[in-house]
Length: 79
Image 1 (tube, rainbow, N blue to C red):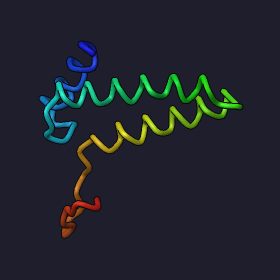
Image 2 (image 1 turned 180 degrees about the vertical axis):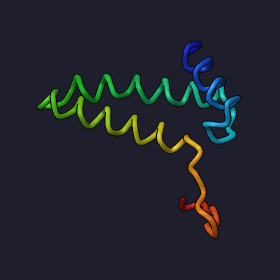
Image 3 (image 1 turned 90 degrees about the horizontal axis):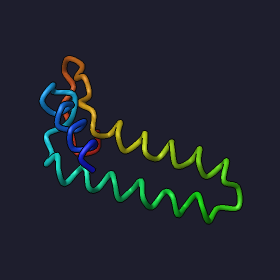
């Protein structure tokens, strides 16, 4: 978890990540990745499960990134 805290902390300080509690977010991501191990281990097709797990984690991480705003665009909870 420490490496996640450091990485997320760096991203937050550099303005590349949304403003969320870094330590809590690191624990959330760690828990999600821990659960992915069980998901892959119990899957009929481990290859497919690994691909899906990678996509899911990338989706979570992408959601933490600060999105560039286009002129006239208003940020909403659905963005």
